[in-house]
Every structure is written in C-alpha cells, then in structure tokens.
Amino acid sequence: MIDLLSIFLIAGGLFFYCAGTVGLLRLPDTLSRLHAVTKADNLGLGLLALGIALQIGDPLSAVKVLLIWLLVLAASAAGGQLIAQHVVEQKEETK
Amino acid sequence: MTPIILLDTLLAIILLVLAVVALHSENLRQSIFVFIVFGLVTALVWARLGAPDVALAEAAIGSGIAGALLLAALRDRQPGCEHIEPRPSWQVLTVTYLVIGVGLTASWAFLDAQASRSGPAIGEMVQAELAHSGVSNPVTAVLLNFRAYDTLLELAVLFAALIGVMALGPERSAPQAAGPLVSHFVAWLTPLLILAAGYLLWVGAHAPGGAFQAGALLAAGGIIVRLSGKSGIFPKGAWLRVLAASGYGVFLFVGLAVMAGDNAFLQYPSDWAGSLILLIEIFATLSIAASLLLVYLGGYPNAWMEDKESQHA
Image 1 (cartoon, rainbow over the protein chains, first blue to last red):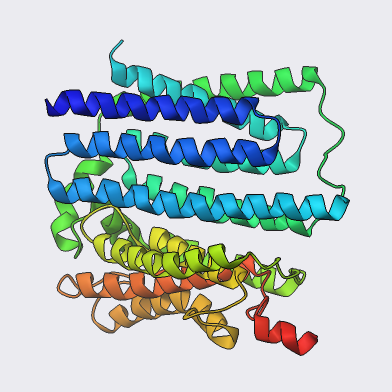
Image 2: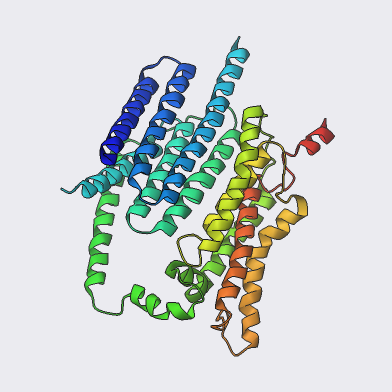
C-alpha cells in the first residue's frame, strides 16, 4: 500500500518536473520561463520528497528529507525573485 | 545491465558532456554556469564512488565557492568581454581530445598494473593504525594525523594564495542591493549554514566531514551576508586577516609544541591526538572560511560594508 502511494507520488513528481522542463524550453521570455520552472519544479520536488520519505523507515530521516524540500523552496523563491528583479531592471533601462 | 550501472554510465556521460560544453561555450557566463553544474555532478560521482568526504568538499568548494569566485571575476571584467576569441580550429580540438583519451587509457592501464602488484594496501595500513590516531574516520586520520604534513602545506598554499590576492587584487565594486525577499532569506539561511558548518566540523572525527567542508560552508555564509551589505556576526577588518592566518599558525604551533616531548614534528602523543586534531580543525575551519571570504572580497576585509558606502557618499 505504502509502495503504491510512493510510486504514485514519485510519478507525479516526475510529471511536474517534465512539465517544468518543457516550460523552460518552450516558453518565449525569461519571466514566463521562470514562472514555469519555479512552480512546477518545487511541486515536483515536494512530491518526490514525500514519495521518498514514505520509503524511509526511520521517521527522523524522513523529516530530514522534508526539511530539505523546505530549504529548496525558500532558496528557489529568493533566487527566482532575484532573477525576476534583474529582468525588470533591465527592461526599465532599455525603455 | 543492472539499473545501478545504468545510473553510473548516465552520470559519466553527463559529466563528459558538461565538461565539453563548459570548455567550448561561446559565452563565458554560460561556461561558468555549466562549470557549476559540472561540479555538482562531480560531487554525485564521488558519492557513487564511495568517497563522501570528497563529494562534500567538491560540492562546497569546487562548485559553490569556485562558482561564486568565477562569477565575481566575470562581473569585474570590462563590459563586452564575454565573448572569447579566437576559437581553436577543429583539427586542434580533435588532436587534443585524442591525446587526452590515449593518456587516460594509458594511465588506467598503468594503475591497473600497479594494483595487481602485491604489497600492503594503504587502506589496510590505515585501518591497522586507526586506533592510535585519535579519530575514527579514516579520512580525517590520514588528513590530520598520518599525513598531517600534507594538510599543513595545503593550508600554507591557501595562505600564500590569499597573500597574493591581498597584494594584487583590485577593489571590487559593491553589488546591487538585492531586495527584501533575499535579505530575509539570508537572515534565515545564515544561522543554518553556521549550524551545518559546526556539525560538519564535529562529525569529521567519526564520519564524512571536516575542516575544508565546514570552512567552505562558513565562507558561503560570510559571502551571502556581505553581498547584502552587512558583516553580521562574521568578523571584519583586521580580525578577518588574523583568522585567515590562524589555521596555518595553530597547526604549525601544535606541530612544534609536540616536539617538547620526545616526538617528531607533528607526531601527536596518542592520548592527546583527538583533542589536538579537534583544536587544529577548529582553527583550520575558521581560517579556511576567512581566507575564502577574503579572496571573494578581493583581499579587502571591509569591502561592500554599507557604513563604508555612506562614508564615501
């Protein structure tokens, strides 16, 4: 049962990673690409982390995996905002 | 093929592709980013090879700090210098890669021949003497006890490089203000980095970790705090220079002090080995962190501080 749930979560995570990557490759400008990657990859990583955490017997290690996900969430929010800010500033300069 | 061999093959191929792209990209910025990814994949490869100590060091120094230094160097270049010319011709490239391939194959054959020769394996010798080293992590035992001389010289090399940067480095222009979200993130991340560095330093005695990995994490904390225009709890001014020199100094002092007994240079008495190694590692960590931060700042310990900016204004 837990295995099935894990497979489902990890498969879902991979799907969101694929969607994010397609967005990164296909969308026209930096801001929309950023939009695709930050949303889809964070969700994908979360599902992946949940799926893996279920497979770890030790609850402490499972919590560690989820904490790593939180750390990545915060880092990508800050990083995404930095890139977006840079893009906006460049647009204002060229106006 | 078993899945794990598939994974290893995939990692090896990705590593090679990243290396080629990093070397031949038309754009320096792109090269640097690919190089950073190359460092991360290298760390994965080291982990797969069963060398977590090296993997940690590669991720923290080879990818993180080196990436930050390269990006800072790129920023300091004149505008319009991002494209490098002229590119080598394809004949030159073909010959280069052929030579590299033949060289690698030859060294593999050589190492294989060496390994099949009989003799005491180094790993077994380390395991036999581990009980006397004062630590239970064989990597730390080699780095700080059996071959402490090498590590002492590594710190000396880092110190010499730092003196070079401090003597010759140009002053770096202050980075742009990064905005509120990033400064909150920095305020949140820095304590975690310090905690992780302390953990890596402590755990190095019996598990993967140690002074270089911990020092690189601390340096990363110092760099992001300084990038946001503050120094936080990280030392500045003359203290940063003193700390940078302290790793080499304490190591040398301990090495000489044990000679007061009937020991050779750097031959710790067995009872004291654990404590002496911890003492050396603490100062090595602080000194590596201070050195890397100073190198990133171009050798100016007070660079980019906001109060200094207001003095200029």
